[in-house]
Image 1 (cartoon, rainbow over the protein chains, first blue to last red):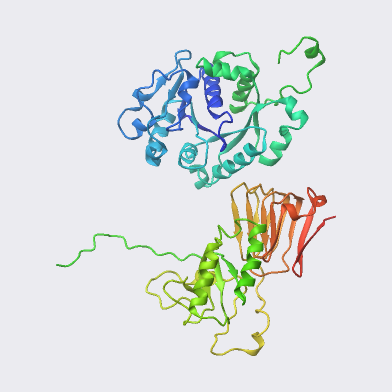
Image 2 (spheres, one colour):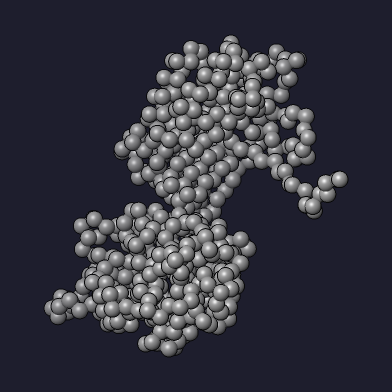
Length: 271
Length: 255
């Protein structure tokens, strides 16, 4: 029985799709069976980031409406054989998602995969609430700036009320993924510090992904950043995050902070 | 030909109790509306979300004046949901409905007990108009039963609204920006208060607000309110208690 993860944020443009793809690819590279599901019906992006936009035939809405079977809609990644994508529709919108349909699809995926990663759309309406409905684990993606933090707080409140687990009296395991972190700006006070964000949101930190041009390069070539370049700083941070996701107790290092003496001598290579 | 009822399930009518804001207009209405405008200017949108009850008890006006007043209010985006204390001569089909404690002769079988609170902003007087009791002429009867209290053990997230008109609310955790606590009694926040806190909403002027770190967006006690801008800047970030002194909100650091 697989675990359902929802990657959500409330605010748009913080790195949900990038992180869903990166974490999915990182998990799959370790041999796990992973499917990433795009819930952003009408504004789909996950297929672009995964490099599968020219192979989309059927999508999530087709499956929900019975026009296609799940196996017909799933797209296998060309680089990692245990990684699959269930794309969203681009021509329809979120009103075509039904709670019963989503439940059927997620249940079927849970039975076939180890990890079901749901890439939530931005916002707090139907698309986002349906994406989080069946989650066991939630990754709340936040940029260290005030509007993102407030929206993430809102989404955390919804995770405690609109998920199946919340309705049954259990709690969804929540993790904070701080993305686009720029240490220099945090030092200058232009960006919130990690401690400030943690104090406001009060959920455990999964990882800190530094701001980097590698992410843009990776999405331009149509690959999750952990596949495009496994050695760049964001990739390493994503790999560490997957280890924490699987339960390992790895301390989080703030990127760019307190570089060692040797690090300063030998240049900018992040560990 | 008889109509066969095809619906096997009857429509369910549920009773709900809501807390509404009660406004008491005073003659002359132009002056009172000017004061209302002043209030609205200082807090744009304060009335927009809230259902408002108009208390017209004892006002010497006729139906047309009342109609004018209601339309003046809707021009100001104050939506009047009901009328309290209105003589039957004042009521009309085009005016908001009358709100009373008890229910009028009911055709429906909704549960009656919860309706008592709808629309009242003060403690309930028990005397019927027909037999007034002299001792009740002054203040509303104080409640003899102990005040219940609500304890919330988790942080209150943005967008969440804690609503407890029956008594005190204690939050063990933070209140996020964009969250709202509405209590009939006092509010105690063992953590940072970043959202809105409204205490004493049922007319309790002795209610207080306590917090470990004041960063509130708006605080109100018994209808008197202050936004973040109006709070003294050196109180920000400190443990503070806030109370009402007459008609002024006072605040001081704790300990």
